Amino acid sequence: MGGKNNLPVVQIVKKILPAMVSITSSKNLNRIITPIPANLSAKKKSEKDFYLNYLEPAANIGKKIKISSGSGFIVEKNGIILTNRHVVEDPKADYFVILHNNKKLRPKILAKNPINDVAVLKIEYSGLPTIELGDSSSLELGEEVIAVGNVLGLFRNTVSRGVISGLSREITAQGSFDSRKTHLRGLIQTDAAINPGNSGGPLINRRGEAIGINAAMIMGTENIGFAIPINNAKRDLEDLKKYGHIRQPFLGLRYVCIDEDLKEKFNLPVEKGALVLPEPGPGGFREAVIPKSPAAKAGVKEGDIIVSVNGKRIGADKLIEDVLQEIKIGEKIMLEIIRGKKKKRLKAILGERK
Image 1: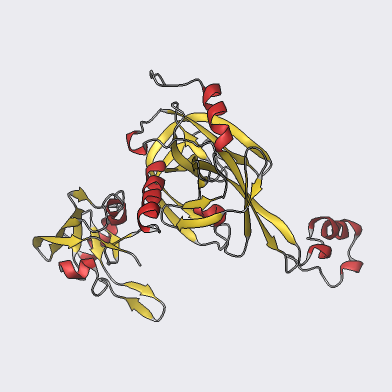
Image 2 (image 1 turned 90 degrees about the horizontal axis):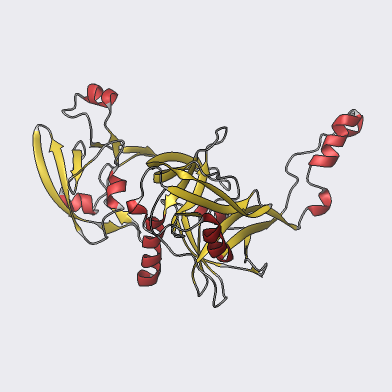
């Protein structure tokens, strides 16, 4: 794309590569992953060769082995690094950061944000090169971008080029450590190649600024990758500096998004919104409105339909959480609700999730 501040791709790559890092993890192997059949000796040679060649050798049991790798990038000269939460999600693994000069350091994990899939690390090293953070709120479809990362844990500083293919995308991703599913929203979609190991690397604009953190790819497809908007990470960095931890907004209610089926089933007066309902959980249902929460103090009740938050219409494409992420904790928010056949406006003060 054109632009007076755009730099040649080669110049951008030379500028950002010194601030790229690889993140590796290792872990004690305490068991053979796949059991060896008791009658292995009776198996034919081809099957025996499979077990000998592909199972983890018993000699490695109890030793630390490399289990994964990802990417990251330095954003402050004192050693602050941004990456994905899922790159450093295993609490039992040992993580190491490898700098551009091959220096290997053990990082301190300062914070992990499971909602935005952002993690902030710190290494003890001074005078480091950095990548400047851009503004992900002003992105446009078709804008040229560059993805950089540590592909497959083998090919460091792999560069791919593409465009922004979509904005505000939503996907469900599964963690590699505990297989929990995470809903990621507001993502940047790009056709720049994002492969395993790219996770945590930067998505760069033509001014050499990071406007996203490479996060995921869709298996079985080509040219579909996703990145976390950099403004999410910038907010996390600000929280860390000011409060010592990442703050998460908290309203204190449970709901389901209204669609045609739900509207018909409950004979609802609107086609979009959030219906406040209890949620099934261990031992029974969990309350729709959490006692003493900001929503409870504002007067929200089970069965209410939240139509808008701060004037922004709520629906499957704009969840309550999406709006709350744009509001500072402690600020007043306006909830427009429908209760029965009446419309109401309720004021709440956004709290912090503990």
